[in-house]
Image 1 (spheres, rainbow, N blue to C red):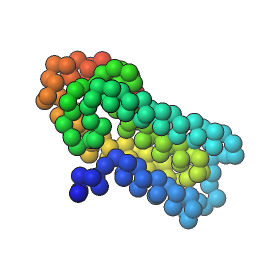
Image 2 (cartoon, rainbow, N blue to C red):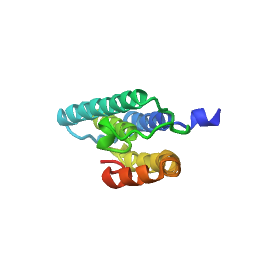
Image 3 (cartoon, helix red, strand yellow):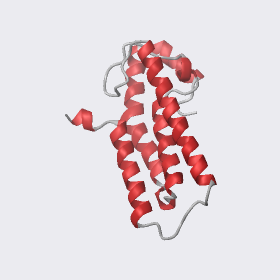
Image 4 (cartoon, one colour):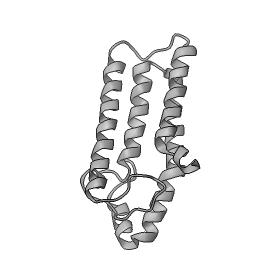
Length: 150
């Protein structure tokens, strides 16, 4: 049960809830500006969702799991994975930044690096360690060619 609770969408939901609470209860009159933050925020949320959908589609196409705690059957290096090793986590981060901008939750901005740090420590590093053990040379080559985030 703990593994199902310790999932990236739960961490994203928690960060979004904190950002919303900051915006709702502790705004202190701060804001990013009228229109540009809404437009950029919506664009980032859309880009994050698109990245996630592209990654899920590519992983399904290669018949491997999208669940972080499971062992991958195959290493996916095509499609969006040829640009970033972690498109779903990058998408999560874009959604968080986008919603913070859209909500004018200025004081919630420190949640972004904190969220990235948590995701990297709890999910990315263990996943990459499993891939490194299972696909040794292939993963080493892939890690040299494609950056972790961008």
